[in-house]
Image (tube, rainbow, N blue to C red; front, side, top):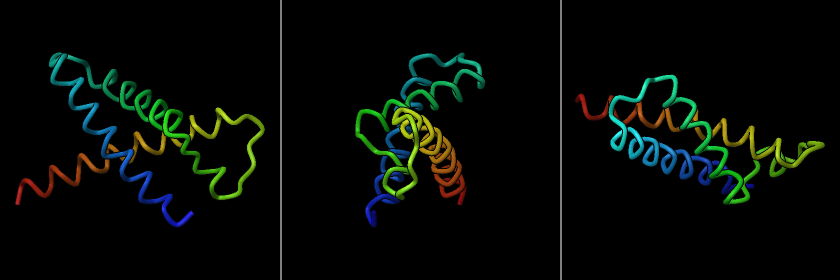
Length: 92
């Protein structure tokens, strides 16, 4: 469990990189689609890497996919935080 925060941060970074890659491929993409793409990427990363925050915290969920879904949402929101932090650091 002690590596869980590091794993989620690493996946958030990867999600941010992949989302920026998609934005590079499709520069005129609407912001609403970018948020959706980031969410889908986060869910896919959680599922593909078998990272489930709730399972690792000992919180039982009836459906295992729900854990990946919620973890993916956390990862995608973390990607937004990473993006804002990187933007702020580049301003200075």
